[in-house]
Image (cartoon, rainbow, N blue to C red):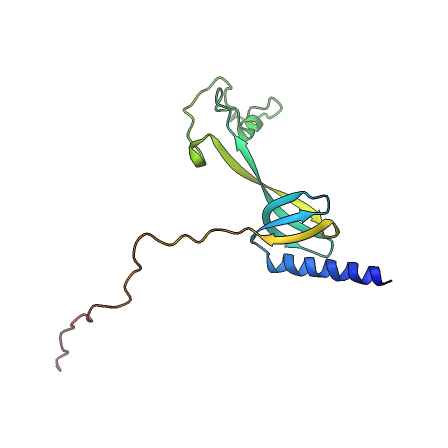
Length: 148
């Protein structure tokens, strides 16, 4: 009986933490030791919904060989917008100077499998330039209003 109460209190605390971290970049530690990094999107009684990032890389030999273009080149897809697979274009660099990008996918994790929840720490980088002065200059001299 005591074990059930502690288990329910643990689930409630994890659920409360997840609702506090809603729409933040968070790390979930599951009961099997797996760490999941993503944005918490929704929290309900049983599950936590997250947007988990997947790193994708564009094929260097065939830049048209991306998941989005493969769907368009599918022979089962009878669009009038089908593209030739031998068509070539110059690849553009993604983030980091490489031909890669990130795609977010929705995943649901049961609350009873989550051990810990934490925010992703981002470093605070001080600005290089000095802050903008508040109001060091005198006010603009308006001409006096003359009665008509």
